[in-house]
Length: 202
Image (cartoon, rainbow, N blue to C red):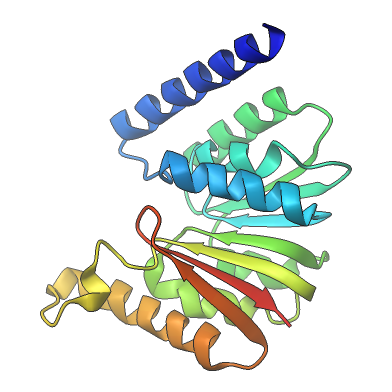
């Protein structure tokens, strides 16, 4: 009964955060994607995890839930959203070592001292390939890199792209080519949510 109450409480809490994020027009991962992140963290058992684009902390919850004696680092361009994520994660997981940085991840990542064994990318789509470049000296061997929204609402498969979507689509296509054709990555794509790319840094 205790476990059931815990599950119901968690679901209620996540539903509330999901509703609030949607009301504030803050993009969040699909619930199924969140559960995938939770599972991957459980299996990988990372010691240093980085989230690029944490929003108000919805995806952060799934990433942080199964962390044990680990460090969690999150970056978001929006200070207000980051502040909410920080408050939410620190109150939910008070014993977790957390670091929250407001600003552009491309400026922040090079200054980080840690090397990461798990990275989740869910920020500006046109910058996805640049995140990989910024991470080149910050990844441990066999680090896991998960990128969300890789299909961009199916736009990467479309012949006609609206002008305001072109940069995002071009960035995602370049990212896909980088993780597919570069021998330092082993990559699988999953048709979940808006598309997930899971790469292992070899």
